[in-house]
Image 1 (cartoon, rainbow, N blue to C red):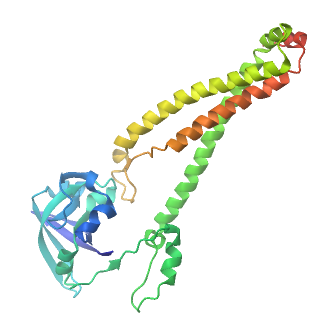
Image 2: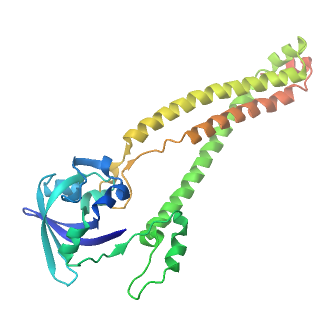
Image 3: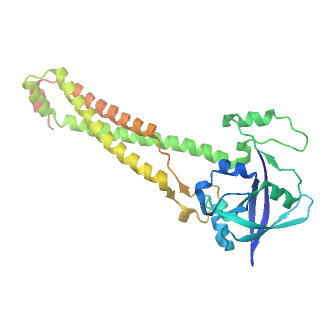
Length: 307
């Protein structure tokens, strides 16, 4: 997919600001950037005008239907300018995009920069993103052209993303271990506190296996009840946050890193089922371990155990 990226200056009245421009073919903009739901004014039809970030629009005092002037260095080394209509205002959710980003039609950019039919980049999409580095190295391009993978283009950001994946995995593992410890500790204490009850049941004629099965089943049912309640609450909360997001805009308003300041949690039923299964299994095991110990006691020994 062809595109042009360049820097320029955008002006409206007495206000002039630096801007980063990406030029695309209009049909490519929607599916590539997925911005239809982010429009807060106007539309995303690049064939009719430019799209600008929310904060940039506020700084310039423009909205859909207004015009602005874009200045940029041409391919010939001169200065090119164009009066462009604003077709839409977008809230990208990234601080630097909302403040300095503009989207425009590829043909208009080629005319402004006097590039003819030329472009600065051609994007190639692979089925497996992990093949990007190997694919880029395999290309034999004419002198003066180079191929870069997404990891090379992102630079340090790619390393940050990989680190974030590892951090989230470790954090998730820590939460699972903490939850498992809490479940085991609670269920173990609950069973040992009922040793007198176990002694009474054995004195009334219950066999060791029956006692073991009874308390293991009770632990599993308690875990199932708690797991269902917690899963329903967690899924409902995740559904609300997935729709409305968690807005960190006030915290990140002065940060220009390419990170979104509205986080939309992923609604994953698989994670909910895993949590439910974990609680069920851990509760049953936590009840089974002390129950196995208690089954070996005689009724008299169980009744003498301090709860």
